[in-house]
Amino acid sequence: MKKLAALGALALLSGCIHYRNAPAVDNGAAAPQGTPVGLGQPVQVGTLIVTPISVIEDSRCPENARCVWAGRLVVATRIDGPGWRETPELALGESYTTPAATVTLVSGLPEKRTDIVTAPAEYRFVYDGRN
Image (cartoon, rainbow, N blue to C red; front, side, top):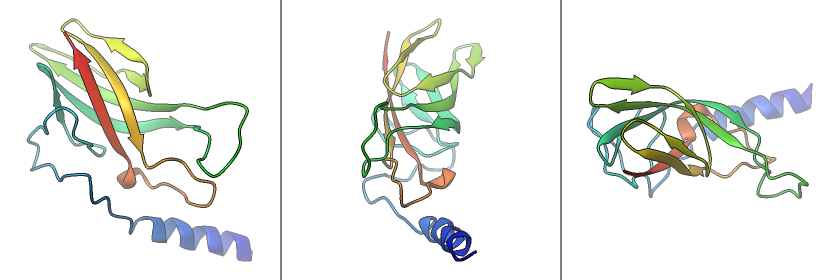
């Protein structure tokens, strides 16, 4: 019972983490490419608007653990182009080809840890794109 209470307290406290290097995005305006964005925050990637929608999987090996498998970070990502929209699941480091460009999820923060539960609002993502 004490462990369950401690985990609950940890989950509540983890919502208090702030990222000094993650600039805020103004009310729906797309941030410039390379800017870390949170869920629901759009970023301009080349000619596309890319918006992380939800974390589908975060099975990455925690930074304070040893693992035999690196794990994956998968993010449902809305991609808007001229006259079309897609919402693929992008895996960290893997490229996804759209009708207009190739989009890659290049970073997902914070790193996973064994002692902290990451709340959805804490995630920050960086995307890259090529025409």
